[in-house]
Amino acid sequence: MRKVKFVSVFTLIALLLLSISQTVGLAQVPQQVSPSPTLLDLDGPVSKWTDADLERLVDLIVNEKITVPQSQNIAEQLTKEQLTKVGELLAVRAGVPMEEWRQSCRSCNAQTAHLSSEVTLLASSEEIWRQPIEYQEGQGATDMDTYYSSSECGGDDDWVFHETYTYYGQDPDGLRWWTTSSRVYWAYLACYGLTLNGFAYNWSEVRLCAGKTCTTMAGGPDWVRDHMYVKHK
Image (cartoon, rainbow, N blue to C red; front, side, top):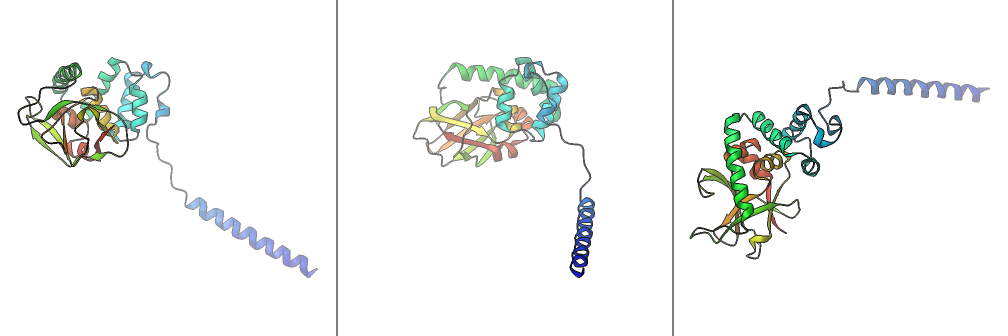
């Protein structure tokens, strides 16, 4: 009889402790907040996305809520008109006047066409090479050391992102750039088709050009410097 009472008391104590634990656990549950937009909000084929869908996409881009691989997958499915719209929306979010963006876009398209038409561009007397540097996702890359404003890129003052101590075996054809930022990826995709003007004054450096308007859309030169990398494929 005593044994039965002991078990009963032990059971009651255990149930009481369990009840207290559940009550405390419920009290510690944080209040739910509205979730950020996700890719799940964007339904249907990418080529059929509306302007509202693209606005949600730009929200993800600006807030770095989408990875670069995800961005690449989406970008490959966008129409030319949709990509132009993404560029416009990025410009608006960056505070870039629409006319400035359109003018920059026209200049970017002309530059991209020129870069694509020639494998190696004519270098100045001080440069040892100048040519387009394509984008390629990768690892084992070196980030940029610094940046400066210069007309070296071909007329207007652009940002020049400079990386030193890069070994590429005197083979600039094998150089590639890439980024860990979705904002940088999309801004330079909209502006340059991900192909940047590159050059060097010696064999242990790489300099990449990017216009100031497009770099503002990409988050600013500090952000680009900290999230841009070069490698030799």
